[in-house]
Length: 110
Image (tube, rainbow, N blue to C red; front, top):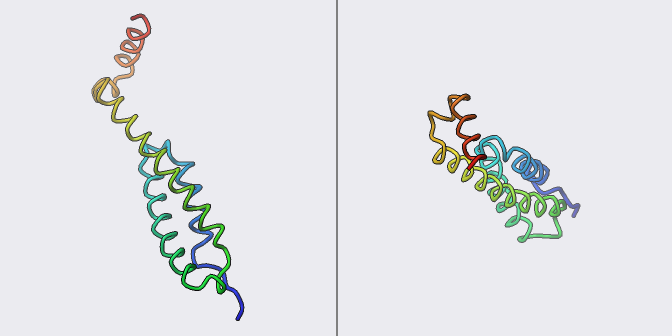
């Protein structure tokens, strides 16, 4: 029987890469891509483990899953950073560039 490519193996790899590249887009876009990649990778892994001789492209699935895990970690760190900045400076200060600059200068002088 001829081997066929695992379904969504390339998509999993691409979503894993996108989850890392978009971690600085407030963490939301990358987090969504990473979660979707992990869900797809889990189903593809189950399919591959059932009949490994029927499928190719498992390397893409493994690499995409690893990148998605890295993307989740980076996105959670960035979301935590954004929450810290909002908590430290306050929402009103972040919307007023002059006040933000004043507070940053005060921090540097202290």
